[in-house]
Length: 301
Image 1 (cartoon, rainbow, N blue to C red):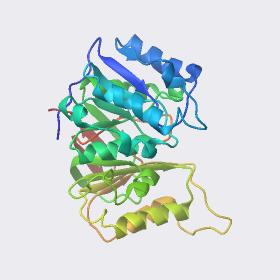
Image 2 (image 1 turned 60 degrees about the horizontal axis):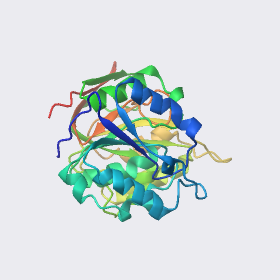
Image 3 (image 1 turned 180 degrees about the vertical axis):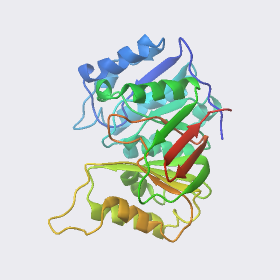
Image 4 (image 1 turned 90 degrees about the horizontal axis):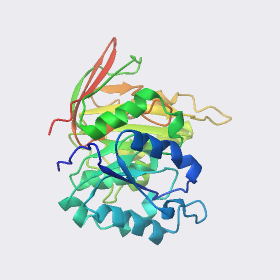
């Protein structure tokens, strides 16, 4: 796995929009937060471009992001908003210079496209909150983002769940948004899952579709050789008028019931205000006990 330098006072952080559009007003709290912590923010009017729901057409968004990818002075690229759009630009990008001078790519949700691509390239990335609605994020979520970017240890403790499978998992975490992962199966952006801890989260989905996606991963052999499964936020999940009959957690537990690796639910990362940072591609430890779970990532190179 590639090593990426941590950020320091004066580090340049570019903000790019590979997916949905955002306004200047929506961006301001995140820009202020970066500057208050001593980082230099890099962006221009192109960040606020509009093309239907996107921040410019596909070629435009890819060109801006390519410029930041190739710029050796930029040490992190913070993606502004998820939604949808990254899958339309990922194959337009050249990561040759990025791999010579790797930098942190930060975001979640639709950013899972980039997390998967970078995982396949052997480069870590940061699953964390984005500028969109940044002022609504908890202090703990924001602090975890700062800690991850600057190389400080991460430690989270979270509650036990009746469907947890006890044990200790240790290794690299891969994954992100389940819907986005499902849409990448068979592509060169889907992360290698064998011997890895798979992390999933999702929002605004129906239970039956979560079931479909889990079985899609299962049939593709992506759940067989995991070191563990970590389930984050399952937010605003819907059921049909005729109930599916199982909870969304039961659906996920059933899909991996034929395996004996640890499983934990309730990991504090996903589509909610307390969205804690997770360093994908770095060694992490998660211990699942009857009293609860503990996540540790010391980020030692």
